[in-house]
Length: 386
Image (tube, rainbow, N blue to C red; front, side):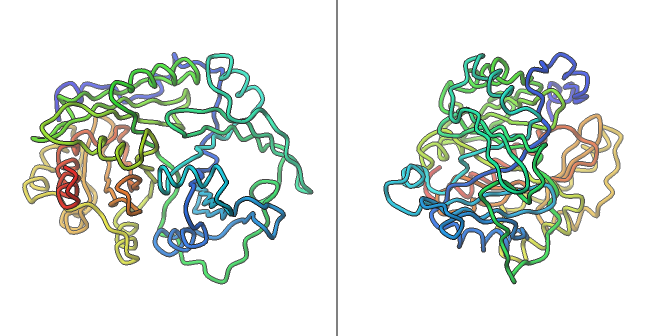
């Protein structure tokens, strides 16, 4: 790990003392995917990732243009939405981007205030505040555009006692595979175009009051063939973290360029989901058919004890078990973390997932970047897109 990265203070509480408080965020409310076939996608996320059925909206609930299936696992809620006709803007989104994330919904105490504050600072409106009601109370929703065609929705549910949102009914299903131990969304990464990273960093600072607490340039994130740049944005309480990536010049095409080519624009690259037992979680995911990037070489794992000793940390897990599963290890002043990345979860090489377990560390696996990107490049070479 470079001296510059090691010297970063991951004590986020200190960094966030200067963060603006005009947009208090309580957490991630849900993530909505636009997909070609929501019924089948829901079956995949239940079977492979251990999500449970929660709620449904569609023709049976009076919705004529779409069908939406809501899945839950601990604090994670996913909506899988598919259009019911070719004229739907949802269909246009899928034709262009393939399956992908459309909405990152943020849980707030006051959606009208969140909308007013962000639009007054330059955000483009997606949905003006609307009150939705049913017998369980009311929810206030509002939305703004962010990078590409991605949207942030503000969800105020303090006066609502239903299972999800008005307009949805309980989704009864006899098929609910057991959880794999996923707990919450740790962070979500966005890929933007050439030269656009700093523009969106400033947007998150100015519009949403986020802080840029960690940056990596192409000198730190590179391999023999490709490079990228990344800046990590976080809100004041540290509950929402959005790293933003852009391509950098290299000998060959970077993973960010590949994503932009196949997603046909900026969008969410990956969702990092946390677990308290990554060995058990990854073991189950592998058994259920989830494919992960190739395991780092033997030399990587031989260097791990030294990297941990550098920060006076001791690995609690068995390193041979971690190696056999392909789980990577990194450390900072406050602890270490364990992480692994899936291959793309659809045919376009776009969206994938990260499984992460934090053992005190606040970083994002900077010491793993080289091994990770070399693994990604091996996949790119197989696809003929490197």
